[in-house]
Amino acid sequence: MNFRSRHVVAVLAVVALAAGRATAQPNQAQPNPNLKPTYGSVRLKAGFLPDPFTKDLQAGGQLRTNLGGVKAYVAKAPDVSLHYTKGQYPLTFTVKSVGDTTLLINLPDGTWVADDDSGGGLDPLIRIAQPQSGRYDIFVGTYRKGLLPATLYITELDAAKQPPPPVVVKGKLPDCYVLSAGVDDYRNANKLNGCLNDARNTAAAFRAQTGSMFRKVEVQTLLDASATRGSIQQRLQGFTKQGASRDYMVLFLSGHGGRTNGDKTWYFLPFDFHPSRFADTVLTDRQILDAGDAVVKQKKHFVVIVDACFSGQLHTTAQPYLGRYKGSNDAGMILMLSSAPHQTSAALGNFSAFAKALADAMAGGGDLNKDSKVTLDEIQSYSARRTAQLLARARIKDKQDCIVAWSPSISKDAPLAYAGKVVASETPKTPAETPSRWSGDETLPGYGKLSFAMYPSGRVVMVDARDTMEGIWRKQDNVFTLAFANGSVVYTGTLDGAVLSGTATSPSPRQQAMRTWNWTVRQQSDQ
Image (cartoon, rainbow, N blue to C red; front, top):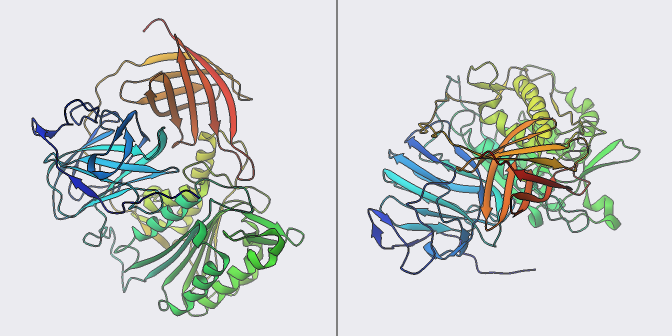
């Protein structure tokens, strides 16, 4: 196991100013906030919607810096420049990625602030309690040299600011208690990617409903070594001691799933799973449903969300449980499962397909009729469509039929989230750019012809034998990295004259290794 010193709070460092912006010390190669941001600028005013603002990018760069007291590799130019008009809310910056990322920000007064792991796990987080109006130049870095696909989040969501309820909700809002568990680093099963982010993102999706769908949201997140069978069971059974009638108890699981007992029993693999002690180290569908039944008997709603292979078997096992809750005055059980009983579940690198679809639905994507409510019926429709879309973008052909079901005591029109009114953020129009164009082929079966249009801003458009897809690109020395589908499809190549060639990877079902193939393109001479 590798150990290193951690700085879990933001560190401030004041540096010299030039023309109102901070500059590096003489004779040192340092990031320059005066350069044009690679992924563009954004203008946001206090109270902006949608919140959070997100930007997909490539973290890292060629420069090794210690600005702000955090050692990191960053690019010379800012990744994003934020022009912010202050109000009464704090401002938070964070990054989500499958790797170890950092944040470095040059504030409006020229001060540098940086962070490594305050966002939990390997994610950085910087919170500014009283932000000033002005320009924030943001550098998303990596702890180790190399580029990583990542997503930058800028948000004002905080205890001081609750999302405004978009509709009038009669009566007292229920409380919500979330147990969110994800396992990537299995010791006795093949390792996964994205499950930790699934757990974080799902917890954040429910937490964002504070003040609109729920009066309060309490979250317990169990990641990797903390997501043992005992820990999950203990907290799951603890739902009976929390909350009151009409409150929501939510269990989320992301990791390996399987079937046993002639494919009649579904199980989840916690972190401490061991094949020699199978019965004592897996969590079965009936153990989950029995715990949920005890909760529903207390007139509480029990929500089970699973992103794992074969999880649809849990729906089959749950039929007699769901049938117990029929009265309109009863509480009930809600199931949201990533795949049918016979199907695997795809992890896409940064996240899993169904978990991402659900988070997108709760963030507003599921408001299909634009009435600000995200109902169970809408989540059912949207998650199926969104999951299929994410799989197609990641070049996964396997079918994955997610299941969203509920007991007869719950109406299909019951909301699980409120979307709020979405308004466009004030993003400056991007000037017209002339891309460099490349064409060639790739060895991935079923594809063949391949072309890229790479724009100076870091945007890239890929056209292959089946689709047109937008992504981001970054160059370090003569090595190019092009990422698509939120970083789940990555092309890495080396430039030799006018020829760019290398390997590409994309996800496959959880139980298989990442797919890898070769590609070659040549720069077109009519540039």
